[in-house]
Length: 435
Figure (cartoon, rainbow, N blue to C red):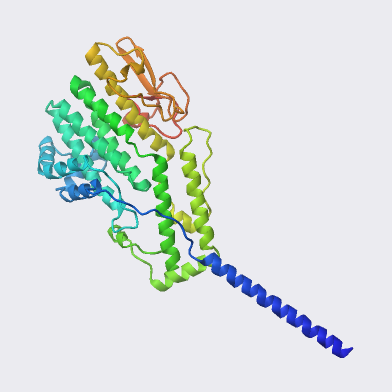
């Protein structure tokens, strides 16, 4: 009996020991599989040659007196707030004249294809686009000076140059390029609205057709999200391969980003990856971006739910910085309203009155009528009132208020901002009044 009990005990220990070995082995295999660097397909980028991206970099390197350009951008209100002296007209003339070379180089880029290098390249996209801002401002100053001299057609052309440049910038870029491109377009639109009533018939028609060309070449928001997905996946792969959450990119030197000491970075990485698997992190990020891409193809509506972001510290770090969706949609809306306003003016200058309906603008003035980005694919709203008209979008509340413009009702010293378009704005976006 004793020998039988001993044999049973030995067998039990062997079974228990074997089970432990199998469990540990399975755990090790699972961990090795889960911690293996995921395989994802990120398409190779084929950059055009010549590339307007490089031409604009060359132009921005030619810019002189950048501090003066920044100061020249101040309005009287901002100059007073920041105690910055306003530049005189003579100063502005000097700034434009000494930057003729940069402006000339910039205009070469307008006739080239544009594609941003991938974010993992030697260039820092954010720093590069920030330098491009000086170019857009120079075009704005040039337009202002031409308008001051009564050269309205030239002023309008310079303004559209800024809009066209802004339309190029998002191509091949993650969402950073779209944000900067929106800024450049706003600089141009502001000037074009100010001189639209002074343009000749020929210049008005040319401006309408240029705006239509910009519309037809718009880089879709879904494409920017796709670029952001690939950029985020590439960033995650670098961190996975180095087992380092705080991996240092060489281009970060432009932003004065300092790397963490190696041992500290690896320790924090080890702690993180002991809890989160690389496979799951990549899967969660990719699924999140895919959901946003699918959502971007849907018409803009108030009731669409937001895509919930994963609760993962690493994913939050690589998540693309983005404008709110209302701001992106409004940029398209502003361009469409400006295009139609130009076409309507061209129609009136040739025929003596505004058309009864927008469709009469086709095909002489523009080839097609732009839709309302806030209106679920429906056309922009238009109503002729005698010798004037009302042109508007239904706005972010997606409700047709008959052309009653957005008005936040702020104090008098905030006259311009009271008509800004915000996610919670109520009312319609009136052409030339809401921005």
